[in-house]
Image (cartoon, rainbow, N blue to C red; front, top):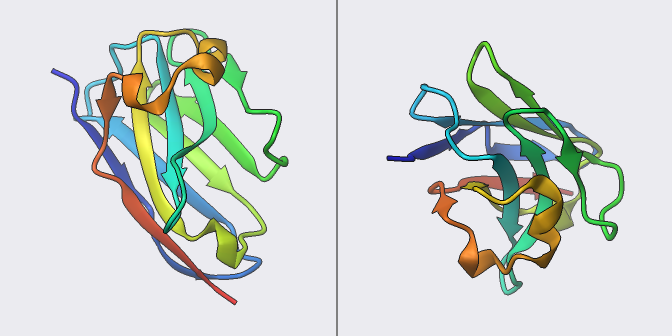
Length: 127
């Protein structure tokens, strides 16, 4: 059973950086890909990045600027999302997600078809 747990959210100031962490109950991810979505107030869920747990291959939507970096630590069984130069519009709930699809396929995968979701971690950015 997949159980995704996020951590690292909180209240930060504009310009700060933040690293979010995700684990599958501390045992390593069993799906092909792990990714991050976010949902800002009044907006739809937005794909931020995906990574192959097996190979480390990453995918980022073209629409995003290079402020998001996804990575994995196989030894610690963790996936991270580094966000730099935070802006107030980055305020959102950030979700760790996992799915058998390969990382590049997620750009065609509606969010409601993603197999596994964490509870989310709130990130609030003050001006």
